[in-house]
Length: 321
Image 1 (cartoon, one colour):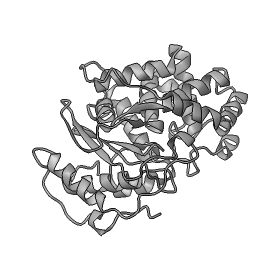
Image 2 (tube, one colour):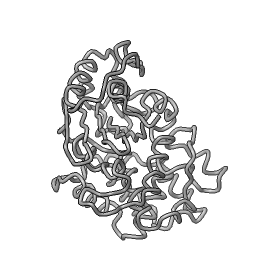
Image 3 (spheres, one colour):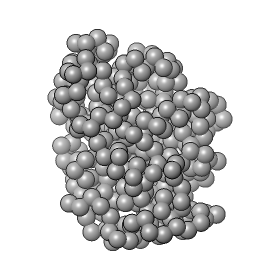
Image 4 (cartoon, one colour):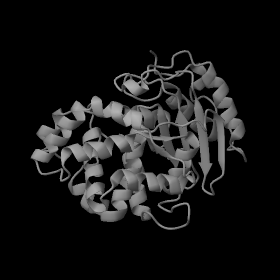
């Protein structure tokens, strides 16, 4: 299916940033409703294969926690790889630059579950957002905390203000049953000494991490620390300003699989997608955005989600460029 927006979603106009973002979201939702191609669900994860492609939600969280939303913005969905942003931040908050000895910061240019580069690069993944890199980050967080997925869930609950956030055990079990490629990645890196947790235990943590169910509102709020330059919702510091910049930079260059260049060109914001159809995006110093629609393009990014974020930056002028 087409992964480019119709003419109405191209960058041809600019309007001042409104005092409230609600009219912008309403306009985007109306335009997305007319989007002809919505892509396909992530059918290689059976629990996600039957997703309704017409679902669409979008939320914007401002620095003070004010949230605007449209469509299915309060409907929980499978966060999948979006959670990699949060485990990366949590690990950096605990061990800092030591992490970068175990995972790189460069775009991969290969599919997110590729084994090829690992052999050439001696078991060091290119970046924290491809599956191999995320497994390393989860391994590091597991070693530091003894409960990587639980640490993640506690953080998401605190930042979103939603104590009801939980794992979707059905999705986790589905991924476990079809997780041979991730197991291969983990065993391969373990052979180079870049994984310390026993692989079965690591995979359990990783699949639970990816199964977190959250809404657009939850994830937009939870990512707010990146717009506040590392400051959590309660005013405490999770990351230094420099490390928050690092996370945003890796999101911009590596956050949408091997379509990061196109995403930066169209949207102009740090972003991280997941194959559940969600995408979070950060406007440093201003707000965070989360959009969800489960139809994916061939690179694994939400077709309607990318189109909506493209339209959002067009209408508001909010961009890092």
